[in-house]
Image (cartoon, rainbow, N blue to C red; front, side, top):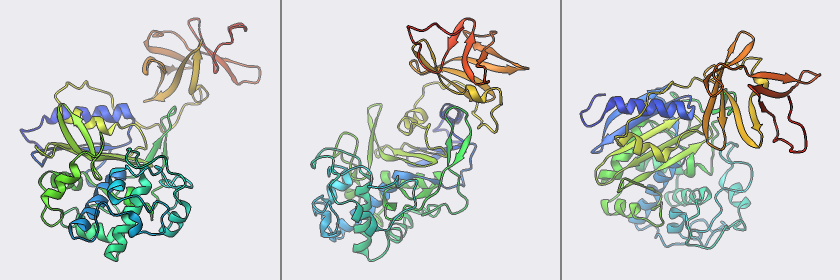
Length: 423
């Protein structure tokens, strides 16, 4: 789309840079000005696809809780045990759970809930008896488990499932028809990117069941833009304007009541980041101006969602970058070389990237050299070792002993000062 309120070419460049630097199989994004979606872009994905939005789900759960408060069905100072008496965190108040200040542990006991088949609420609450609390009430400590308790309270007070409540009372009035509980088609596949090889591994799209109120939902750029507009303008059928302003007020340095707070160039944005296996997402908007951003990606890591608003709403020049392409096959000559190496005591890594071998300093967090396969040689094409051969020195059994390049020796462990340097 073309709109005079946005520099589309610059936004395209930002998105390309995010994809390349983060090694994202796909990324889609949108920019809002005055509450209107004025730019959308995609690298490797489709704007029609649903992406898992992770903890942005919490903002929807929070709205459902505040609706109950406005109807007089609960108070924010009620203990959660009034509605969920069997929980080991019965004394935690609704307000504390919304603000992550109840002193609860961050994750439920058991296997990693985001990657594991979900359990029902009875199983969840039985395994979390309150003994894993990390502190007393008042201090911010992010808790996914807390939002599972809030979602259960919503379901019990409404007499229907959490999903039926939020889909009927929050999503439908806002016109968020493309937001779904699961990976209903069209949906992006979530991926994990191998750090050294750049290959892709499918991530599971688990139904989190009892933990769903903390991170289950799937959505699109268009629907999240509608939610961002709601955070700016409100909606009489969803929340009173005074309540909306209440949830946006700080309860700690970075959080309100179910909303993440982000300071950007002297103004405060509200929204939430989100992540689940195979996905990262971010939604932030200035509730005063309606300027905001939405971003969705199909990678477990690699996207700094808090940095996206500054990049897409700012005016800092963005350099052109080469798009990153996932690896289909690592050459046999390179595969044994990938991973961690040491030059003396200095750690570096070798990774396969866009059909070239990259050497990166871990201390400097930057690329230092690039090598390419030329016939049967590995030759430097960029950096200090440009034009030099990277020689692979093997043991008698054929395994790799160390690497040499113009007298630089790289070993799998730091040098032993008492031992001779290989050569």
